Image (tube, rainbow, N blue to C red; front, side, top):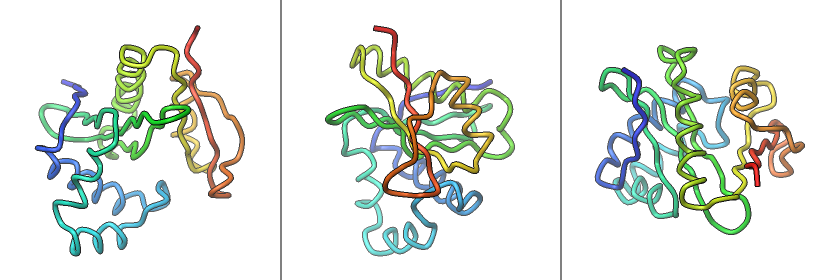
Length: 159
């Protein structure tokens, strides 16, 4: 069974395990590195991971048969909301987990911030992720001015 649920800071260890696995298995998919995350983990421990829960918006975990296999973070601040830290474990790819994470984030945003645009950055060469985002209604806005390897995509809700 495929489920996506919102977690809070009390489940920071689940978030930590998924994030470290994502950085280890797919290092080219993120601006962050495993080395940096491990260094911050060693220095700040729990406080570092709790920081992921300090910004407004949900932290989402995807589970298949109770096992965590995906994650995404919707952050709502000024301007468009952002989708960060999106990742699906290799064994769950192609099963709808990624789309379920994105649509859950979009549904949350529509319920709590109607009409708000959701933006994300994706590595331009990551064609599977780009296709997934396109299927979920995201369109390419242009290159990411902060990272030449990435493009910006956004989902503008019907108004």
